[in-house]
Image 1 (cartoon, one colour):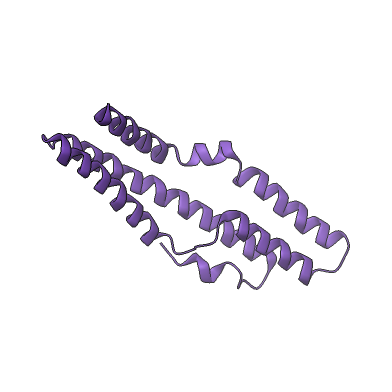
Image 2 (tube, one colour):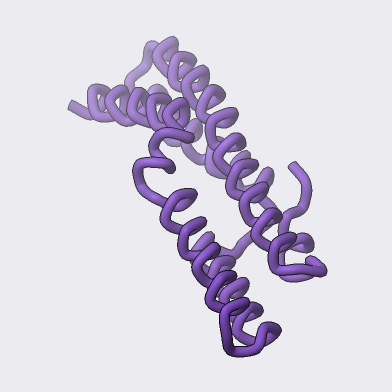
Length: 144
């Protein structure tokens, strides 16, 4: 995955900033879905451990490895809301009061409302969510 951290905040135009943010969000969600498949496979592997104590540790190790893989793939450390706030601040600093500033802020608000909505997030990360649910149900089953 490309390093989006350098891209967001250093683009020549506000439109390019918003495009970089959209690409970052898309790449992040894609990474979650791809790593979710590995979590699913690791969860299946955990079920093959016959000793319950070792199986418990296998489940813990699987989630630790999953978290590590996701953190290594995603270079941008700022949250989506902080990235949106940075673009908002750039709009306020670089554009004079008036229609142009209002139009860019409206575009940003629309982007935030559509791309960062809960429904859109769930829709675009359904593979990850299903794999995580399988892991969670499996882990709870193991404990009880």
